[in-house]
Image (cartoon, rainbow over all chains, first blue to last red; front, side, top):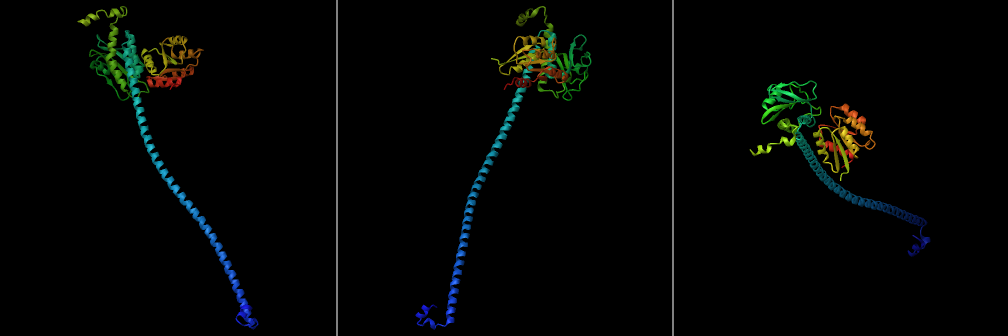
Length: 284
Length: 125
């Protein structure tokens, strides 16, 4: 209590005991001090709260960013999934196309092979009948065997009508000279007699003159007049191709006919004279 | 109009015709035929060729001699030469390559093989 208070209370300040005044001052000072301390504490706490608020604000901002980022990631994942599906579909389509392309290539290779085979057959037939020289016809038969079939060692036999023995008229790739064979004897003789070819499908390289890998009878008008005997084929040839069987048929049915035609032709007369009388024969 | 010309030297008419058949499938390629090495040289002297295909075994002049003669000819010394051999005649093939042959084809001849080799050497599509 101040002097003023004392005066207001109606009592002079000098009337208040000194101890009480001191006590009052001490209390006031203490009170004020406490007030200051309390205020300082409040200010401190306020500052701390502000700091915390700032931190929370920053955290909040960060969380907001994260949420936005998560959304973007989810969107990206969704896009990636979609792209993955598209990629799988494209891979499947690509595989299908690859398969179709392979099929196409296979078909093309097959067609190429067929064209090649047909060309071989055409040329073989054409050349067989393109000459009036027996030597050339036999040469063509040898070419067909060596160049088209891929025979490495072979013999061409013709049946001698008097002795009924198949006589070798041409051969290639043999170490020994082939001997005549009686009709009906061994694979060659039997083929001429029966007109049935004998073609081995096993080992195409291990044949011999006595046991060739293929024997094709040469015939005309349904009768055997000779045979082609393949003893061995070229090393790279592992099996007969389809066209080989066609060539065997061509040789079997047409080589003898071509040989007969060339044998009947007389070069000294020439082609025109050789046809004399044909028109009359056709009229009969 | 032909852009390339090729000389086929082969004594067997059948093989020659087969080669011509195969080569006919190449566009703008003119093919000239020769029956043996001497005939081949005659044809070479009468024109300019971009490619020569020759058999090895031929009468009068074989393929090896022909390769040698072509390589000493000023006009055709750089022309690519394909030789035709059998699988077994490795020695002939080596000799031909040593004499200057560019490539070889083995018998029996397959048209796709011939076409591919010719296109490769003439740099065609």
